[in-house]
Length: 500
Image 1 (tube, rainbow, N blue to C red):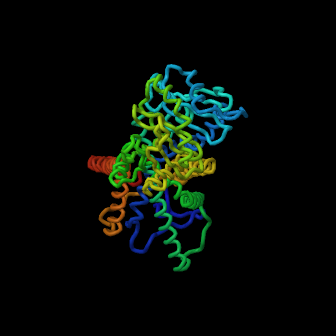
Image 2: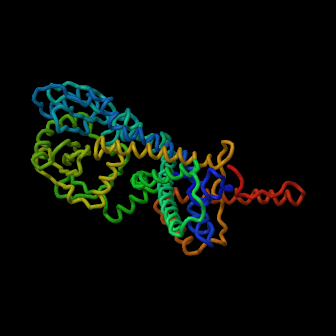
Image 3: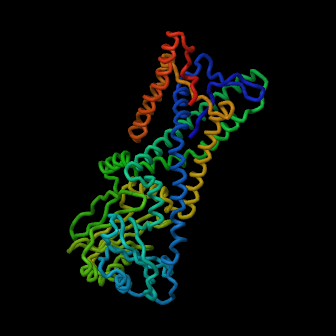
């Protein structure tokens, strides 16, 4: 976000402020710089509150995995030093906590110091993605905790922070808000980069032409502008990364991106659960908290299946699966168990197999190496956005970007107020005269906006609304001024001199 850059119309220079930038000779402010600057500065003022909320909730979202690990240390930790008991016995120990609920899945740790997580379907939770999770020490079969899990692995706190960042806890309307913020974040970043590059280009051009007047002390606003621009350039890659990965989760753009991925076969395949059936492509639906729960067997049937768990896990390990494993029970009679390497920090591949629980035979397998590259890239980028790909390093980088964005927003507002007088905000960038715009660069800017709007429809819709309101803001005062002049009233007031 930014509000003002070089090229702003300003009052006459004072001894404490640098001379105004006249721009390229003979062109005034009619080039693409005028268009981009106006959109960048005005949108920066009005969209900044959305971005500020997104940045603040993003700070909590970035820290969510670490906060969850601290808050649930008891549930995650297995203090017993006894040898691990069979997986079936761990399931039985957890089932005694919820004898009336069916077991649907479990997460097996790679380290004996961590608990085994056994998941139960619980219709009473009233949330399709929610399941009951019981944590069992594999050594002494002690139950270390009982919690609610959402999606793939998130517990209550992490899920709550994810919902705040993704929808402001408002459901579908909140998701539209978040998508609008993400869309404008990318647009403001790209526009700010162009303005920074254009300003540097014009500065070098003036330096090559030689000094035309004695240098003057840098004003407070010029200092803010320089620091704002420098920080924006350093943060640009991170801001664009958050924009485009965030759009994959969005309500409107996410559907379009999903359709494109499906059309080109960019989803990760999943192993078949029935012998002889081909592996199928699968839409992961990378929500902030992972996947939804599958249909569950009845409690009695799941207890019978639990006795096959050790045979299934042993076969999966012999097939080459390593680390933490997500194990899903069959969803219907005649289907196989599904075992997948879990999404955990510093894990860059996720092989998966399906195993016949009755015979221990391998039904199918899908190695991460066989995924389409686009599916691999999506897996890595989404993991990085969620702060789990590189562990605490990833979370620290996300937190740094969020803090940097907050600083950019506050500095942008500071620049706006320094432009005004008596502590009031200053005028916004003036409108361009359409007749003076150069056709070729203007067309390029318009085409770029249209292309970005195709990727981020909420940007296009909100920009259209802005243009309508901006046009009304410019036209209505002039009409009132003409009517007042016709009746001998006050003199006309130029629309570009109105204050917000």
